[in-house]
Image (cartoon, rainbow, N blue to C red; front, side, top):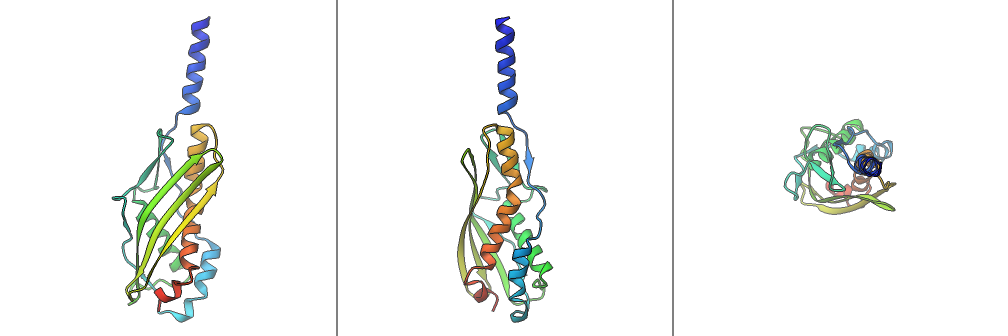
Length: 183
């Protein structure tokens, strides 16, 4: 009976603290970012986006609690995911122009995801550059709720990635130096 009890407790703990792979969702346009971009639409010929780079050697997954990888939906790098998300924001706002002489690129200097109970967040450090020579750095942190259980914590980490990238894009667009990038 004692072995059965310990066996069930062990099994329950393994199930509770194990995880599985989590893919972040496809990016969804932010209406706040779209409205912010609309304020620039008349003062720009449009923007062309060139490949975003990544100082973390093409990272496409992060480990959640050393048990579950959290990655992009199509296996692209986090830098590519952010590039595609930013491009979508520009396209919906009629700011993207493949023939523009204004070319924006960026380097994802760092990305970090934490699932610590009471201190769960996504953190981004990105440098945005323009073909006109202007650039600036954005550091942003998106807090979210976590859980004691691995499965729940990693699911929340995965679920919170899209709003974290929306916030990152918003901080890039609303940065006081953004207008210098697109002139």
